[in-house]
Length: 199
Image (cartoon, rainbow, N blue to C red; front, top):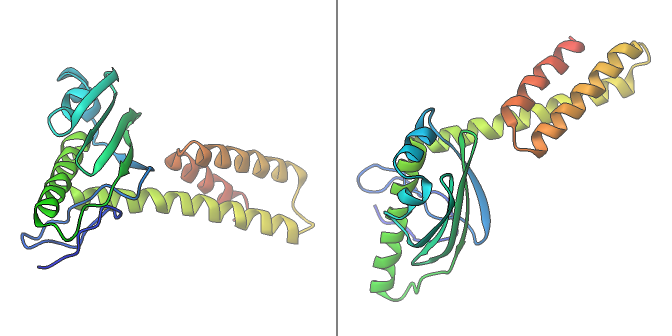
């Protein structure tokens, strides 16, 4: 299946073998990927994240077992770290010469390296990572909607007891702090409690 290569998108349509593959996203963008349970421990036992990255990228440097910095091809700067059960990646790219077949071939190799690295670092394939990312975003959306609905309800009603208003404000603060820290699962859990206050 023909497709257009771009270093500035995260995912591609399925290729001829039916796989969905990923590319480094737009320059300097930070991305979060869920990591399968047990993978962080396994990778650390096998030499750390930098050892894994060294199989795919160049000039890899390690700050500790859970982080690395490196580069490869169009990815002029790559930094990654584990935060809990998540992989946080920051990538800076340059566009390949689209008119140069050799440059495009090299860029496609970069894409394959990127995708395979993510497979090994997260324990999930491209489709699973996409599903996890949607689930993660849905949790954030659910939490924000709960906050918006609660505030709207409290502003429109004069009959909400003060103790319930205080509970709601405490939960809203916890939700906003969780979202700020990218703890979407925690935020969604607090959102459920907030919804129950007014149902």
